[in-house]
Image (cartoon, rainbow, N blue to C red; front, top):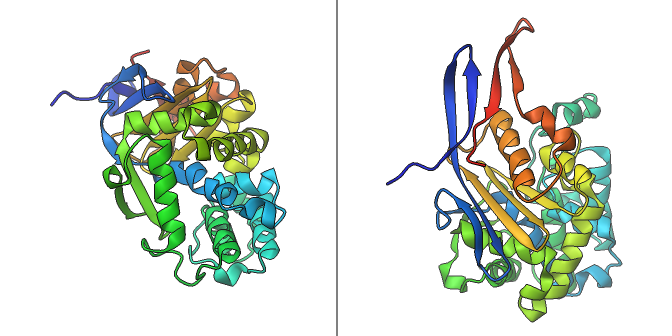
Length: 326
């Protein structure tokens, strides 16, 4: 098997100390491949990059209108947020409108992703609202409340909200439901595995909803609008998705765990999977250049190219360098 291309390296002195490889594919909403580096048929999980599809349940079931939700609420449902005040406020509003509370969330909690967001807590105890997936969970609960589905078992793969999410992912990605690999994500709900080209196809449909199945066109259009109008809610301070979208307001960008990123812009979709998985410095460098591949502006993202790596005494000890094939 051929190795995927090198995308970034960590340099220390004259040597490349660590090498980061991965797969990138660009496709349109009909699954036609425009550009490919590595294996476009590599199967991996969306992880949190699936959240825009899962958020479509709010529109498809009429929950969005039923509870008088706004684009901000749709955006936080798409987001892997930092747990900043504006993020927890939006989550609480969804829960309140559906006569639910934080106690109904089953996502657990964790430290904020961003150091700046952690500092904003100023010693306050963490709650489930701070979990980066609480927007998605609150949206799922709101759909359950509107549809009369059980709110205590919404994590179960056999629950109607999980079945509906799976159907949307399959429909947007041009696959039968049986071809989607299903497992459990880090927050407890199901996660979806598909070939990268189908990931790219699904994301292309957000900026070209006319290429999606008829019943998914309006939900896709609204999700794209929500994400592009509310970049801070999709991630937050110091996060590559938010920085990239603020530089490129017609791009919808969503990162997932383990080195996954998906972009929708100009009727095209891009899917990235880094074989090394996590690692913010090389991942952010690669995402910045994926934005460039789709014709986007680097702008503030330039800080992630040749990003310095610092020693514990504050001296520069190395740097992250883009080495990709484009």
